[in-house]
Image 1 (cartoon, rainbow, N blue to C red):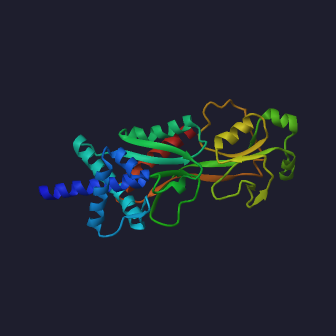
Image 2 (tube, helix red, strand yellow):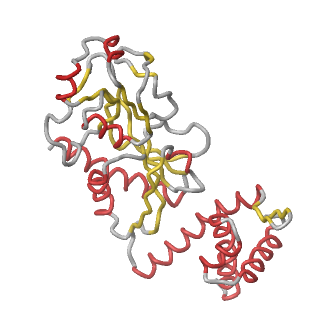
Length: 307
């Protein structure tokens, strides 16, 4: 490779960094600050990138500057290219054949932190140089690909576009209540008995929280006291004896839970199984490491569940 090509490649990456930073932060000033550059330098890099690709990447109305459709597409591809280059440089520098880099991970809100720590340990034991930024959100898949690199989700694998998907575990969605609440109000014997209780529900993906799943198939409608995408909040309501709560539980025991503090309600009638998946855009760089990384997590989860 000639020195001219090396310099040209480095300059292209700098232009892409400017574009990706602008797409991430939304303003020239913030993009410049994140890269330690002046706004004039950022504008020059973006103008040079527009000239290089031959299409408009920026659209200005008054004082507002936004990315065009082409600019958004190039920013998405540019982010991946920058990460590939940085990972390759670090691999060469460390002479290690391993997965390295930083990833943004969107997870369902309300998962218990101690459980997340256990799960993350399985992956990072294999790849200690991996770095992650973890964001609890109501709809993890909606963050892909611009605001997250990986989504941990209860949702089905997306049908549109090239995606990598790995099933990590199974969750059992059901009804739970504190024993003292049931002793005080009564234990339901059939679905219609639930009308006499205060009911709480997490908000499952792509499903109204008022429609509760039946083991035999289909759903039935309930009137809720409260609902939230925060699984942990709904579980705490049940622990506090406020009513009967619907939420998913995983293969691993909930850390710090006193045995018997919650009991299943109508488990033979109400509930369903939900796969827990990791999803991310399919790229050549991530295909093998992704499956290897999450395969290691899946093995660890199953080993803990069996043990």
